[in-house]
Length: 231
Image (cartoon, rainbow, N blue to C red; front, side, top):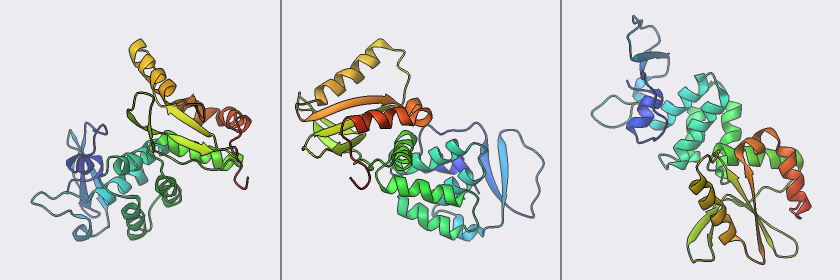
C-alpha cells in the first residue's frame, strides 16, 4: 500500500514531493532494497488505513502522521501535518482523531500541541512558532487570517492581529522568505503599506526571527501595546 508523503501526494498534497515512493508493508514481511522505493513496516491493520478507490493508497491522515512520527527532523514532520490542513486535504479534528486511533504513536505530544495551534488558526510553521512565542512570553495569542480590505479595495488576509485597549489594531506579518528578488520584496512591502491605516499598525518580522529571536519580536509587540494573556 502506498503510504507516507507518497500517499499524501496522491491525495493532492503539493510541494512535499519525495524522490522515493513509500510503500507500507506488514511488519513480518521482508523485502530486498529496491531503488526508488522505501518500505515502511507497520503492525496497523491495512483495512483501517486504506483509502477508498482502486489503488491501494493509505488515507491521508494516517499516511502523514506515520511519516511525521518517523521523520528524523521534527520541524519537517510538523510542517507536513500543518501543510496538509492548510491545503484543505483534511482538518485538525480528523488528524486529532487519527492520533488517538494510531496510539501508541511517536511524537504524539508534539502532534497534539501542533494541532492545538492549527485549531487556533495557525496556517504555517511560522505561525505555529509565533503562537509558541506568545505562550512563552505571556502575550495574548493573536487572531489569525483576518480578512481586510487594503487602501486599493483588495481583499487581504493578515497573519496575526491584536486589538489594543484603545481600539487600534496591531498586525504582524511573518515573512517566510528571504527576498533576493527586488520586485518580490517591493510587492510585500507595498502590501503591508496599503494595509496600514490610522487605526491599524502593520509591522513585520521574518520566520527566522520568530523562531530564533522570538524575545525581540515579543518585546516590540509589547511596546506597541499588545496585551498580556490576562491583560
